[in-house]
Image 1 (cartoon, one colour):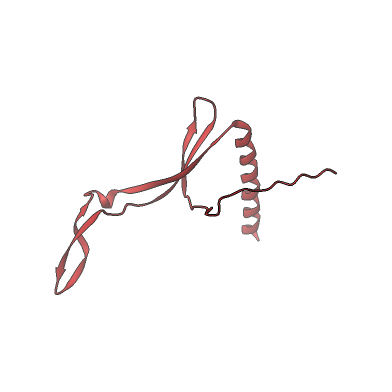
Image 2 (cartoon, rainbow, N blue to C red):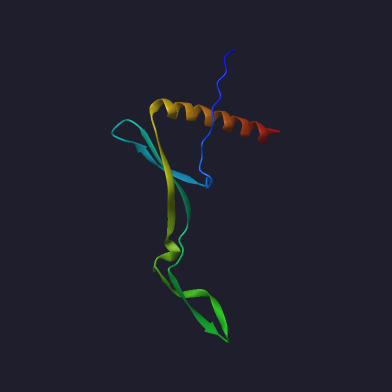
Length: 107
């Protein structure tokens, strides 16, 4: 049987990032474009609090932006572009790992 060795090249500062969502679709070239994001609550640029007896009250009386309590952000750090064949291979690979996780959860 013939063998072939595949070496992986990566930067010294390679560090995977956590994602909890994706956005994208099919581009005009027929490739799948995926933008990975981390969805989280928005952070204020500033908040104003009342002070009573030397203590800051827990609720802000003003925030910037004003709609802070009704806002969230999706931080996009990276994405990928896949052709049809690569998308099918990754779909199969991911499906196999999902099946393994499901088997482990049944034990």
